[in-house]
Image (cartoon, rainbow, N blue to C red; front, top):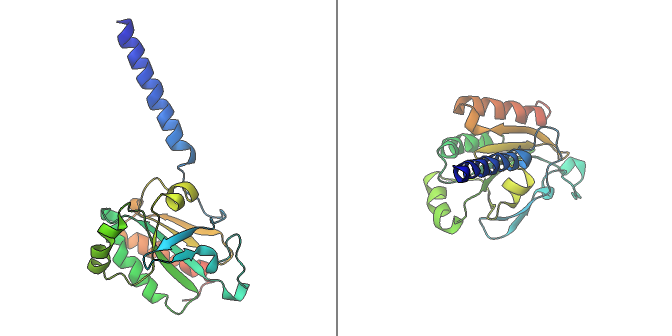
Amino acid sequence: MKTTHLVRTLIAVIVISAGAVCLGQDKPLGQGAECPAIILRNWEGGYTRLRDYCGVKGSTLAEKDRKVAVLMFFATDCAGCRAEIPQIQSIAQEYAGKDAVFFLVSIDRNPEEVLPSFIKEFNVRMPVLLDLYGVAHKDAFHLPAVPHTYVVSKDGKIAASLDGATVTEKEFGRRLRQELDRALGGTR
C-alpha cells in the first residue's frame, strides 16, 4: 500500500513537473517581440538569413531596402498546414511586387524524403526553408505546434503571430491580409 502511494505521488510530481516545463518557454513569440535573426538552409541547398530581408538584429540593410517577411512554419503531415499552404501561396501572389517576402519553414526531420512530393503536390512557388533541428521553431520562436505564421515588420519586430490551428482557413486569410496591410503601411 505504501509503495502504491509512493508510486502515485512520484507519477503526479513527474506529470506536474513536465507540465511546468512545457508551459515555461513554449509560449510563442508575440506581437512586438524582437524577431530572432535566424539562418536556415533552404531547399535549393544554400542558406537564407532573415536579416537579408528585414531589420532583424545584425541587419545591414538600408531602411528603404527592408521588406516585411512572412514565415509560415509547417510540417508535411500536418492537416492544418496542408489546408493553409494554397491560401498563403495565393496571398503571396496578391502581394507580389510589394515590399513583402514569403517563406515556408518546414519542421520535417526527413525533408529529402517528404518535401519533393509535397512541393509537387502543392505546386509550391515560394522559398522553402528547413528547420531540421528545431533551432527556429523550438529554440527561437518557442512554437509548441504548427501551423504557425509570423509577419515580421521592416524594423525586425513581430507584427503578428497567427496560430493557424485556432482559426478557420477563411479567418486565417483575412487576418494575414489585415496584418500584412498594417505592416506595409496600408498599401496593397
